[in-house]
Every structure is written in C-alpha cells, then in structure tokens.
Length: 94
Image 1 (tube, rainbow, N blue to C red):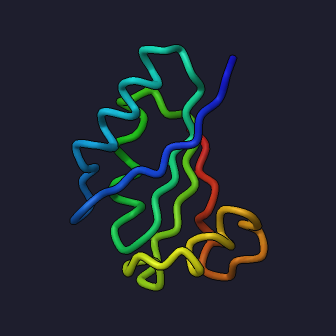
Image 2: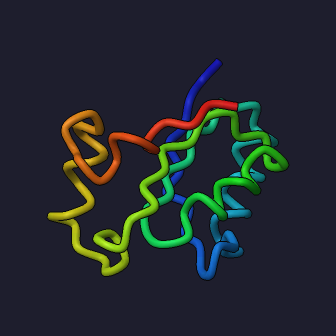
Image 3: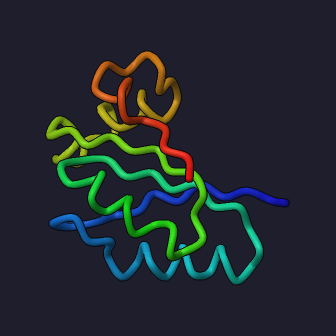
C-alpha cells in the first residue's frame, strides 16, 4: 500500500476543511495516510482522524508550534525523537 504524509491544519481543536479534503482523497485513493498536527489543540484535533481512515498521527500539542515558522516545524518532521516538545506525544497509533 502506498503512503502519504498529510499536514493537517486545524483551529480550536477542529480539523480545517482543507485537511478533511486531503484525508478524504487519500482514503478514496486507498493510500495509507499519516497525519501531522502541530500546535495548541493538536491532541483534540487528532481524535477526529480515525473517522477519516487515518491510523497513524504525528502530534505535537505545544504552543511553540502555534506560529508558522519553517525553521521550527522542520526539525520535528525530520527527527521527532530529538524534539523535546514531542517526545511524549509525537506518535499516536490507532
């Protein structure tokens, strides 16, 4: 099965429409989707992923990710085990 990594945007603990569209398209295409959620409220938003066929999520529920900054977001995606803000909640498998 082919895989896809989806950066799922959310607001106030709810997945945004664009994220839902990507997750739906991945499911329709038969792809194994891994979702990435970073920022305050990420854990709450991640609870919705199962309904969209996501079996794995990379979750960083931390305020340091609230402001978009590629220099902050890149390290967790490349080396999640070396990012202190993510060590306890980074990988959630359903």
